[in-house]
Image 1 (cartoon, rainbow, N blue to C red):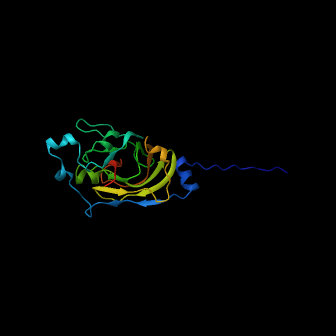
Image 2: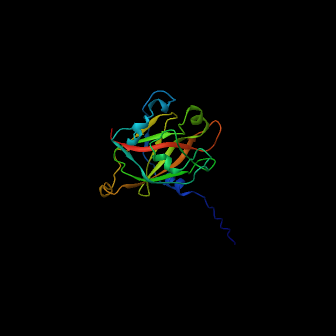
Image 3: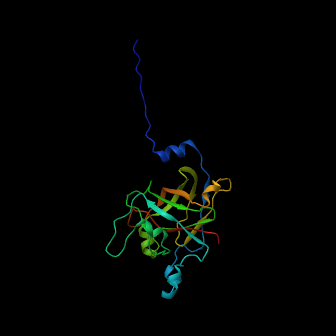
Length: 207
């Protein structure tokens, strides 16, 4: 008697496998304003104030460092969409991913994630630009290479905040040297005109 052995293989990406293998805590981000739209130009610093590089938060702001991204939309003559825009204290600039579909795009950086996380979702140059590009709906957060938790963001302009899950443990030795963080995009709110996803700013603050 002859036996026929049939091998079935499933193709999982590393992120899909991690989601399948374990249930991560889910955190809900909270917008700092009730309105869906926000005009950042009303709070723009005067020319002589820009030397302090403070637009978004006062002295308790902690910027992210060594920012890297999976891809970026090619620059235009008067505008770019590079990773550095995520930490330039300017909510009217943005990083925009270069892959259609957005899922799997990521941002990596070094930071001290012990205070409140702040994120400006979408390209917040103005209302029209924000609506035209996709915004992040859900993120998976990796800390030092390990999946830690997921974040659900609101579809609003302005600043959104969230904190580490209460039961999440961080290596205390990383407090002085910084922690490697990776944010992977799991889903998006679709843009009216473009598929590419945008984030305007990312930082931490204790106030």
